Length: 262
Ligand SMILES: [Zn+2]
Image 1 (cartoon, protein in one colour):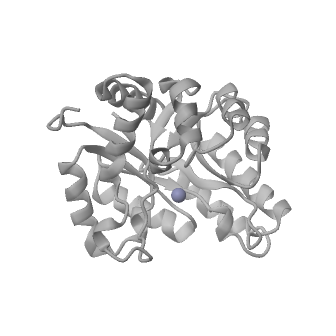
Image 2: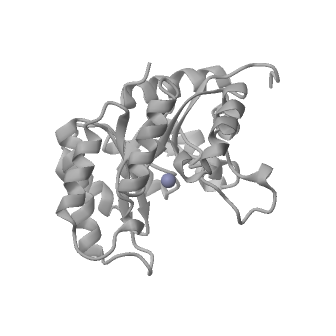
């Protein structure tokens, strides 16, 4: 490993708005020093989506925003006014994707029918504004893939966020032309490592840290931040037996194509 080899990677999924506002400048400083060329910061509700758009306006050419309502943020009935507001936000130029949306079938989450309704409406918004989707899936098996496929029919790019799945799920995503967003879990999951090594082409990989504040970790310095994206890129290079610069080049090309970066 060439220690001094400087990388320029894109972190395709974070939640920067959730950090204290006075930390953002420092976080970005660390990222710029340590090989991060750009960051996408996703919303989980309307307020955080707007907040991420503000960050994108403050740091143009470095932060891009995602707008979306996370399945765990859904409560009560479908709010059509919220969907109108999301649509307005989704049209803004700083918003590069509809994210974070999806299905979450944990016991505490909202009722499945409602989740699917909210997910579907947000997919329709993405299609209307012609922007990619970065989706969340916990416990919903292939349901999100089926809904995404039936709604988009391949018209927009789709990214499976925080990807970790069985071989069957992996191929369901790949066969639908989706990109798989690989996070730090790659460093510790042998099954995922085997899939990345043998089954998932670099042409369908993007990188993410899913960074958000982690007060449950004792030391502030051990909170995940986007600069750690480099560890994922180096791991992929090692698994595939290729140069990390190739991982940089191809994953950046993927990110550019999906999000319209330059
Ligand atoms: Zn996330």
